[in-house]
Amino acid sequence: MVKKLSHNIQDYLKQIYEITNTGGKASTSQLAEALGISAASVTNMIQKLSMTQPPLVTYTKHQGVELTNAGQQVALKIIRRHRLIEHYLVKELGYSWDEVHEEAEILEHAMSPRLEKRIDAALGYPEFDPHGDPIPDQNLRMPEVTKTSLSDLKAGEAGRVIRVPHNDPRVLRYLGKSGLRPGASIKLLARTPYDQTMRVLIRDTDEEVIIGPVLGAQITLAVE
Amino acid sequence: MVKKLSHNIQDYLKQIYEITNTGGKASTSQLAEALGISAASVTNMIQKLSMTQPPLVTYTKHQGVELTNAGQQVALKIIRRHRLIEHYLVKELGYSWDEVHEEAEILEHAMSPRLEKRIDAALGYPEFDPHGDPIPDQNLRMPEVTKTSLSDLKAGEAGRVIRVPHNDPRVLRYLGKSGLRPGASIKLLARTPYDQTMRVLIRDTDEEVIIGPVLGAQITLAVE
DNA sequence: TCATAAATTTAGCCGCACCTAAATATTCAT
DNA sequence: ATGAATATTTAGGTGCGGCTAAATTTATGA
Ligand SMILES: [Mn+2]
Ligand SMILES: [Mn+2]
Ligand SMILES: [Mn+2]
Ligand SMILES: [Mn+2]
Image 1 (spheres, rainbow over the protein chains, first blue to last red):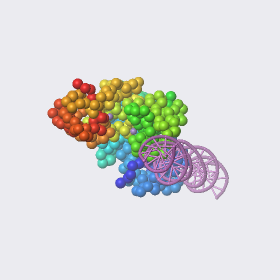
Image 2: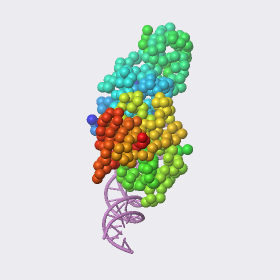
Image 3: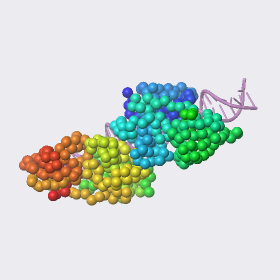
Image 4: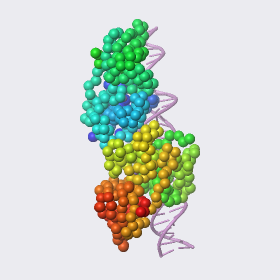
């Protein structure tokens, strides 16, 4: 259906997926920022992506881009590989959860369908990666995910952590130290009045951790 | 010492290593043939490689190329990764020995030093890959290898297989079917007078296999 | 509303790694 | 030893994916 796409194009499509997943379209500057390249380069590339056969994105000048179905299939395939790799590195090769994102960012482009299948099987067809992000299945269907975030909680309420943001290793080490990881039972102890900084208790470790509002919005959980 | 080198350059250096490993210099046309590209492209690239700082190859017009020390270090690092990957895929992910070369050809360029270390450790610091090729150690030193080939044997002589050629999956499936793999005890039953085709007995499986002279020269063994 | 600021696109450029065709150097066979 | 065959290099060109600077469009706010 779609011919072999470059490394770079795969990252563009994945990034467009991530941005449009929470909100309408992806803007030129959002993509430039996320990919670490100039806005002009992004414009150039999205014009190309909108003119492939079939088109991978829909694009109107100055209005940002969205993935077409074809583009979304590509993005989901790469995301699937990324998350399977992260899971495998943690489970089978003793990586810690803050090391795997960077590694997967490269390996995702070098993974054959055969390796994808073998790793998936070796892991027992997992539904979530080490950060709690859902892994699309063989047919690229995403498991359902919760939308409640830590920032939605009121003081005194409790929940079970579903996922944490995965990009910044320092954040992951900070969270990991106190035991705040997917599966952990937590309780929101207090929230400061002005800047909404939160004090969170992790039940299993009996540790407390301070979470700012930006980070808090990226931690999702099931309310208990 | 040497800045980050592209995939393509890594493959050039690896290929120059393979060619010069058995014989003097690598010619433009040998490289073009091995890499599946035009001779003109090869000339262009080796000129570039001879002008890096430090130079990766030594080159005189019309005389072919050799690796410098710097170039050899790069080649050995990629070969190490290639062979570790092959070993890992066979041992940990259930690959057969005819599937791994193609896979490793890609993954070798996507492997971080960290992943290299983890896989090396997980395998117990192996000295040979599934085809019997030596794996350079962390300091890029090659284990010693035998130079005797099946073609050197006289009819009636016996030996233990050390390595087989790894590039062609069909050859590997052919050899594997009869049990001719590294470690196997074999005996050269007969050699046809004109074209030197060999009939070889594999002791463990009690199977016979026919090996032509070109393939025979690429199978190395320890004489018993 | 309308001037300025911000975002986006266009224009023109670069290095990489490939290509074909033509020129030149080397090797081989008579 | 020399002309033909073969190998290699040069010349000129392509697509990819970046870049900066300039032009243009859209958004903002006084
Ligand atoms: Mn990537
Ligand atoms: Mn993740
Ligand atoms: Mn390769
Ligand atoms: Mn091998």
